[in-house]
Length: 177
Image (cartoon, rainbow, N blue to C red):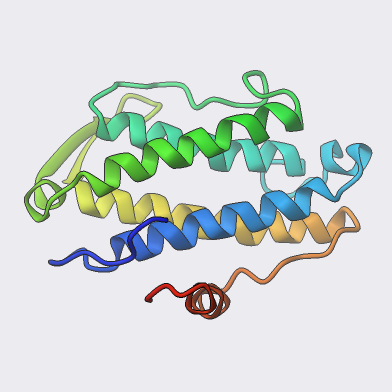
């Protein structure tokens, strides 16, 4: 169980991380109900296929985590790294575990400290670590909405991904929000 509170200016950081993990799991579960043909079908929307967008979402989380740890990655992993649904399903839980371990180890001081990184084009940027973590969490929210649309286009059942639903389910399990 991931703690859902922390103090300081990033007080909701772990709650939003839990929200991201919850949403990722919901779309993965819904995507697993899609036939192979529909799952890999190019849709001309966002990354193209449901698989490509799921891989992009997971790979972006990994790339950001790697940057926060000081690695200078210039290539975002893609479907050449995770060509099958099974490879994505195997990898993403480890990304979540590593992401959680890193975030939970941070303090108010480390979250406020500037972090300099280079994007995939080599451009350099500096922002506080906490702001970069929040960006990554927000990026996931954006893509989960797109994933839900692709699930619907593939004939599947979109899932509720709103924070309200997360809060209700979390409280039912005895957690705090």
